Length: 447
Image (cartoon, rainbow, N blue to C red; front, side):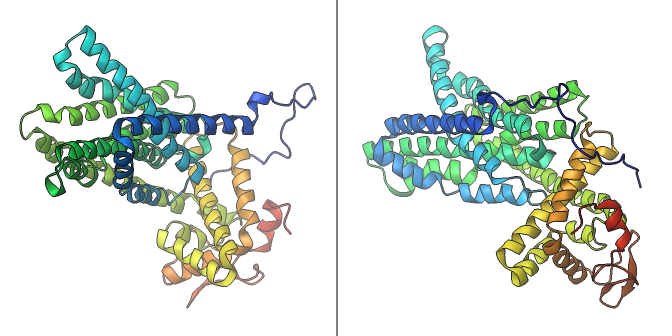
């Protein structure tokens, strides 16, 4: 087991001995307030623009139809993020940015660029150039801004590929939601003028193409940007070129696939279906496999890194196994909810999240990718686990025994295996197989 330097006794203070307060614009509530105001203003403007183009009735119809795939897509991305779930505020920010700020940027910039092409370049090809060149660049850049902001300002919540995929996918889901309101509302207005109804209407055709066949289109494009940021997050802090080029490469790939999708209608009568069948579906399947494989690799990292903390007495012998199984995690939360209510279940869920972060953090440290704050951050995560141990340990030990009662973990434990799991060794802690000495040595504020 790797030997880590001793924990610092206290954080270093200011050089001159004076406590420096941040300026008012550096305070957290000011930044949050400015961000919320920006998104709210963008939402009001985009609402007015869409309603102006579709009319009130068209807007309501478009809203009702466009919202249908949103819960499914959000649930899918949150499911991918269950190993180390990010805070809900990041998900809400990503969706709001895509639906409000990115959509507003795209509508304004695309309209301006298309009009400029029509008046100064080639009027006959303005719409085609706008859809295949301008729109992919503008829209993917606007959506990538949300991923960049989370990457820069919520770095602790952005640790790998899955986090990049989730933030990018939720941002694109919000963007597609607003765009679908516009397209479906406009289609409904067209049907009102022509008198078309039912399955042959423009609204039905638009709904089938955008909501039924390709609700994953925008998320698929932007996820490539998210993967670039995710791989960059796995790189060491000193690899500056790699951390810049990888997100740019993902963004360029997103723009390219977006341009191919938008230009499919120019490839002939069956161009759309050809691109859909030969590119979109295989790309979607490949990225789905990549994300699920990455999710399984994260669970394997948890299983491999946490036993070191078992030896140090911070975790129980069955916890690495339970934390590396999504089924066992759910069993632990259910056990805690049954015997301790919702607060206990919430504590277990937080314990699982902090333990996963600890495993990932140690994994980075083992490979030289962690910064100078490795020990401080490790201690913070251990403190979070220690404060929730009373609710989490019995639940996780139960889940470990119930999910794999006959399988011994491949690391040393403080106890001997019995018929129903691990029995504490003589002199061990109360019921979990822990010796008393590691608690005293590693946990100075034991209660």
